[in-house]
Length: 302
Image 1: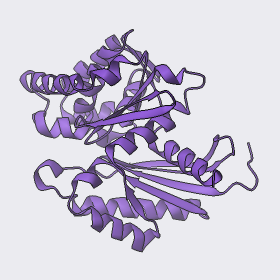
Image 2 (image 1 turned 30 degrees about the vertical axis):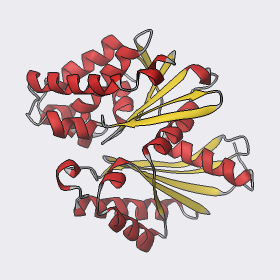
Image 3 (image 1 turned 135 degrees about the vertical axis):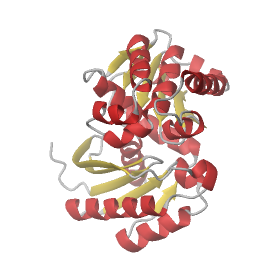
Image 4 (image 1 turned 60 degrees about the horizontal axis):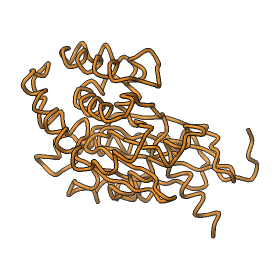
């Protein structure tokens, strides 16, 4: 696939746990030709619930990664950067914005929860082929938040919930490994939060999960991108019973995620229980693809 004349674009999805970068060419029909796809765990959301600040070392790691990615994939004609829950919640988010602008020449847009949900939906849906959009629910379990989005009458309706992998882990799962009582408390909290968005959930028939937790679950399940409740619950029980050192070995493809995977799997399991057939599809697409498709469509329509 060679889209001659189409601009080379870059995007950074700066999350509460991970920064994800993509370089791609976008065809007029929205198809992506990706030539750069990287990520790094920088834990910008670590401790924000208590400090309301992103750690200095996490900011530095994020900017270093972004600068390195741009160097490896230049030239790029336009680069987008979006920040999610950590950037929304931290009082020192302007420091990250200033550092990215000074070092990389990139302006960081802090997304609202609703915009984050909408862009995740666009990106995830773009990877799913001919799935009926009017019956699709997309969940993105991030570091500090979980976004849900559906499409109704051609309009994407999204909501952001405080059910991120890091948020649940830091609030409830501080023992190593997590105690049964703390796991039960985290599950009870997540169940209560999900009840507040029953309208969005009940309108869907096909449940999709995106984000680091979901993709990790797919890889842990033997590279299976269609999971049932039995598989998801089994992974949650397995990982929650392991001490951190063993979880790091189990997540050999992304060892830093071991710190927060238990919280993420609790959210993923409870999401799966809401699916009519107790099954979810995992999408590797997300905010990055959504930003590139959305921004390109906006540019072409002008």
